[in-house]
Image 1 (cartoon, helix red, strand yellow):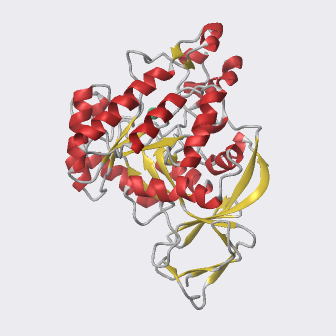
Image 2 (tube, helix red, strand yellow):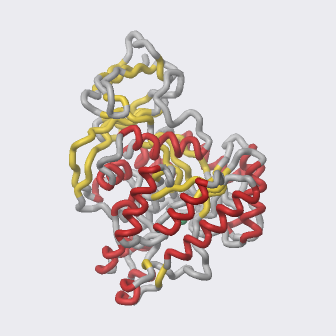
Image 3 (cartoon, rainbow, N blue to C red):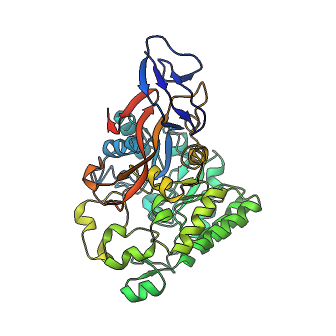
Length: 421
Ligand SMILES: [Zn+2]
């Protein structure tokens, strides 16, 4: 058994065959009797790792399940995803984390790593079972109330102190609720006034980012900023990193390519939290991703059933699909980013942030998690083609550069020629 991948360009550079033994590990020599996977001319990257995925199970299996989300992830070239805690019930206990973990293993297409809630029921007040989740078989390392901000500074401080004990990290959804409340849905500015939509000002994000990097410094703990969306947040992050503060940050594919003006048509497909921002912010996010101020791309894949999304703009649910298109969006938004930089921001950095040592490299001896990409093809996205159970796809009808051709998870081909095996 085993696998021989022929003709791929490693990180877009030199052509080299890749060998996988029957235990699913990368090895230096060709295994005998192995299956061959033709990757002639394709770029080989370590399997992608998503720090921010909403899988909706348990609770909203009509929108996505751990299986359907795993399928979408594999199609997108991912081999690990972090499943956010804002399910129903919330992932705030070891039992809940283990349920997600085990359903992920059952699906068997990517590593599904549960994110633990920071506070019980995402109530923002009482810490969840952080230690029990960390010590469980699911080895939870990332904690987040995502969807909600941990807005109480005292609670955030406690959480940072607590996760330090086991090398955990708090991933913050930065939204000061007094500056951007639950109905805020449009970048605050001329456009929110003109469209008559509740404004979501960039400062609501930036004050939390600034506060949390100071709390990370004070506690000597580690904070991660989810879905950074403004140039002001980038400035704070750049300063914090220069001080040696232990902060990392992610940006979503949609914040790298889409802008506020898409809201002109009141299409709820483009309603997302934080909202789409003006071109100046998008430009700053691209620079920050390229220069390392922002460490990772994370999808914030947020499937929604039709009846939750097809409403007047103010009443529709927040969120967009993202797993299947993430790599192509990054490639389209930053065509000059080298493939090794793509691997850094979509695989090795997120693997390191999440504490997943089996992911993020193509080194001999590591599990063979690999994505093979056609670098130059353009594909017009059709939402009907998605394997997600939801259809809130902001890329419908757009042409994106590059295509995931094959995905290999633990030495097993999960996607061949763009289709699930
Ligand atoms: Zn969020």
